[in-house]
Image 1 (cartoon, rainbow, N blue to C red):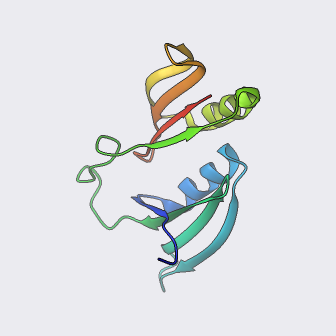
Image 2 (image 1 turned 135 degrees about the vertical axis):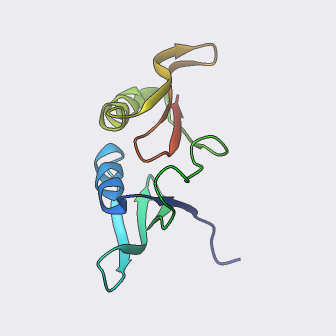
Image 3 (image 1 turned 90 degrees about the horizontal axis):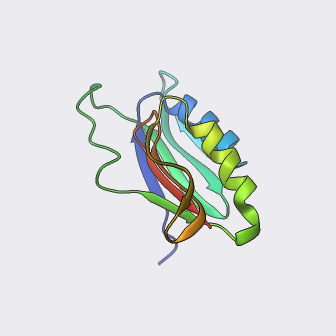
Amino acid sequence: MKRMFYQVYVKNADAAIALYLQAFDAALLNEMRSAEGLIVHAEIDIFGHVLALSESDLPQGQQITGNTMQFCIQFQPDEAATIKRAYQALEEGARINHPLGKCFYSECMTDLTDRFGVRWCMFI
C-alpha cells in the first residue's frame, strides 16, 4: 500500500480549505482545479495526516455528511490550547454536539459538525 488518506466532498471547497488551514495550522500540499476553477482535488496536511477535499457536485440539501463518519483527533495533555484555537475557528455556523469542555474521559473535548457538514471530535 502506498498510503491512506481521508477525503471529503463539500460545497465551497475553497472556503473549507481556508478554514481548515486556519483551524489546524495546516499546510496546503497540492490542489487541482477544473477549467471552471473549482477544486477537483486538494490535499492539506493536518498534524501529519492528509485530508483531501473536492467540490461536491451534489445539489445543496442532498449531501449526507456529518452523521456517518467523524474525524477524531486526540492531542497530548499539554495541547488544550490547540483544541481551543481549532474550536474557535470551526464553531461559526457549526452544529455543536458537545461544547468545548470536560467530559467523562477528557479534561478538554469538543464534538461539532462544521458549516461544511464535516464532523470533528477533538480531545486530550
